[in-house]
Image 1 (tube, rainbow, N blue to C red):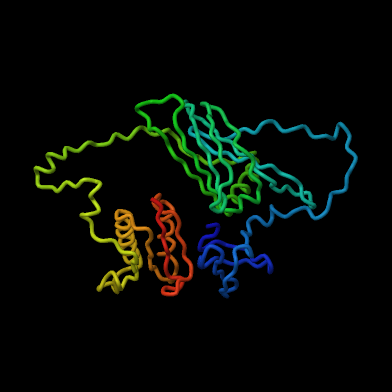
Image 2 (cartoon, rainbow, N blue to C red):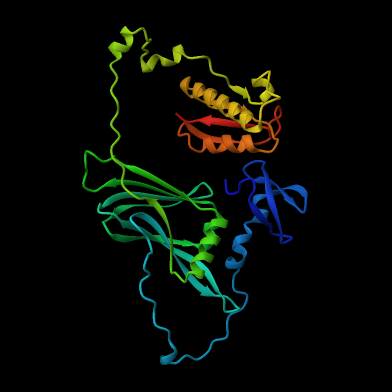
Length: 339
């Protein structure tokens, strides 16, 4: 989702700044402006960090005569200030606004390889959860590779940069592949641009990895010895028969999980709730359940946020949604699995 609880936003029709306090559904959020809370559609708000840079030209600048001696020479190719490793570099492309100030129009993206190995790579970018651009190619050792241009406005749509690397020259001691993910928030990008200007540098970069990882050697177990020692050995295909039954609805209110919870700290309560969630999430997937409803309540939104962050990392999850439910209001998340 583009916005998260705690994000600073700009109300477009009133030009007021506020804070996101709750994610209501896929289209609406609850915001707070001057201690007043009210729901808005996401297309009615934006990140304020981009206001300065994304304003369009209001007037055409008056054309002036230029002479050969006045024409500025093109800048030399940008030098990337990176150390060892593989990096994603951003080269901002500037233009002038009506006040003759520099504004960012777009970014040129480069993959920088400062290692001794050449890599195959698969590259994907997503904006607000939707596919944006993808590319498969190779980047050689100690070289840079131009990926594509990204409009500045698109960087406002919660971009995710995803890479999968593998060695061009296979090595049995090295991993078959390595995945890298970069997520950039609006505020972080704004700070990077400001730092770049202050340092008078042409680019800013994010490290994807420093060294390509070694192959993980799987430990082999002697199941005959384990069985002889009295341990039960189950076939993977029959493991669900020996598991606790799954639930289609789990209630994570602490009073449902513990009789003696009033002396617990907020951290201890959250830990119990998340452990219970992980347990029944595992049982739901082990039993090949099609969906699961998690009741987390509304409260401060911390538990819901933590659960949603976990769900984003689970490959078994096809989709999940926190929308109004006749039985739970906005206090539950419905999870749908895709096996």
